[in-house]
Image (cartoon, rainbow, N blue to C red; front, side, top):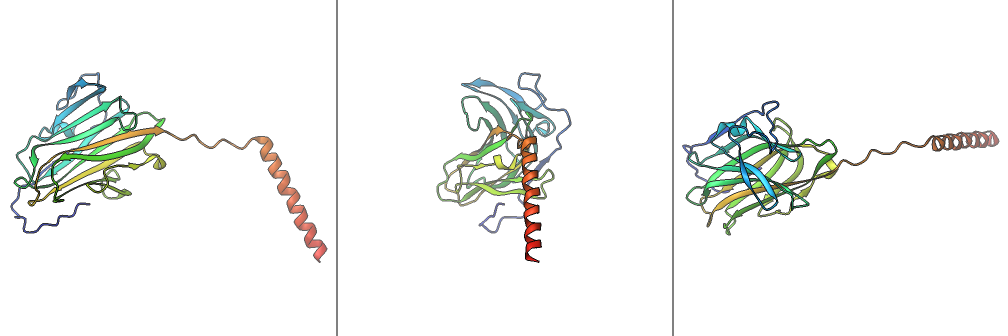
Length: 250
């Protein structure tokens, strides 16, 4: 979780909170009619996607599907009430490892004059039952060089009361990402947090999240019947030997 190391923040700072619940059946395919709030973006290279201005409540009551992943925004908090922050959701088919990308673009950028503490919560789900999440990465764009900012990514249960993955991604400490394949997850509840402090010597422009997937591991093959019979016969002979050894000893 974020920890702020500056003091004396005025209690009268405005905080805005957008909270919504994913509505059943609201997912859209990228080629279908778009939901209100989400706007399809022109393809760039191998990337297709959509964007949504976070001041639009429709961003939090509809979801958007790219490929086999559905994104549902859940809530946002920020101290900067006047903003045009935007989420961009893209699928880049030229990226073999982590092709799904979620970018939170700050507008205006957060800096020493617009310091901010906030978070964005969202759910991302794989709809293909043969796939699970393999890798997730966290990065950012900005020019703060004196360490007066923090961003973190954490993973939770569905009501955000229990942190289900102990690994925490943070910038600038660990930008390379973590591997999730061993957990076998098809749904992630994510919380991205940022803390841009008044002493920052630059701006935080955006947060970038990228996700990759892998195949569900095959179930262990059943033991062949001939193998079961051999194992049973060996066990029976072993018990007979042990019984005979006990009789000899007596």
